[in-house]
Image (cartoon, rainbow, N blue to C red):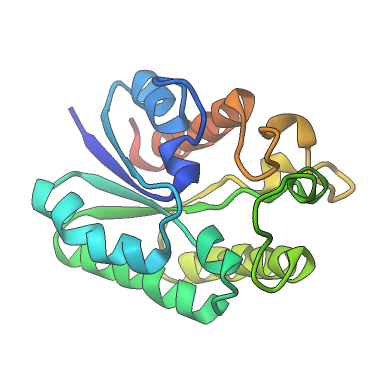
Length: 198
């Protein structure tokens, strides 16, 4: 049985999603693979990089699914710093014989998020949204140049007019709901089936 370790933030952990219904669990069921969820809510790409060896490489999985950057942008980190951290994870994984896969982070339902009472992004929602879109574009491009397979969790959450499908998010506007996680799992399953012949 192949092993996939998913490392990331709350989008991987499955914030406020019932046990067994986050996309890594749904992916495991569909692929018949062992999928380990190493998502930690609030983590940054620097945190992911620091956890790579003990939580991924030491366990010698077949694949590592990497997704992060949303929390970095919340604190107004530069996109180039996020890319540097993510691709350090990619290259270290490859060095140790682990095949990397990258997930493009979901968008944010700004109107819903702004209705909540938690602290807003450091540079405001507009700047955050702009940088998130920029991260998705640059991450997708860099992954293509480095021949890293990509699961797109961004586009399926957008309407044809470019707006966000609010019905796929929890009330906080930041995290996908169960239907959103089903979509993420479907994207992941299709990628592994098409790219790695699962």
